[in-house]
Image (tube, rainbow, N blue to C red):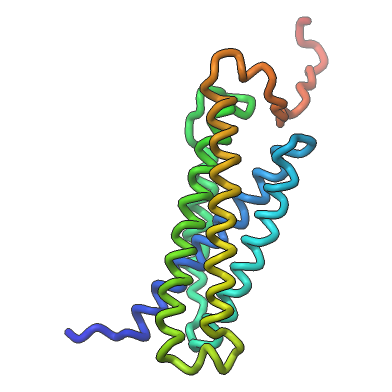
Length: 191
């Protein structure tokens, strides 16, 4: 059976779109978890850029006549939600290990995105549909540069999180936001 390049490209780009949905959700959640800390500003900037990159990917898909496969996007979002269920050494509060693992996951996602932009840059050399939508090699160069910069930011944040998580005594100095629901006693229960 001869492979259908258009079908394969559609699957490839939809898989990346699903991954970008997970990346947007994770980066926004991490920004909220780090509200009021030095990590908030770089995480907020990353979350904004990751959402913009997802929108650019949608533009590329439109230019290439690639339909969005909702199930694949949903799968990426579900994977991000499942990642919240992992055991990180704590049950009711956020563990410093969560920061390390989430930053690693986000970095891996951005590295995958960088590789996708490279593939698209190669496609742009021979497929005029992208340049017809103002997505040329120069635009893809900018996306590559941006992804490389994002990887650098994530690596700095990841190393700082690893130091906080794994250095003796560092955990006590880390502001950790607890997301607990208030406990209400029912009338008649013993104190």
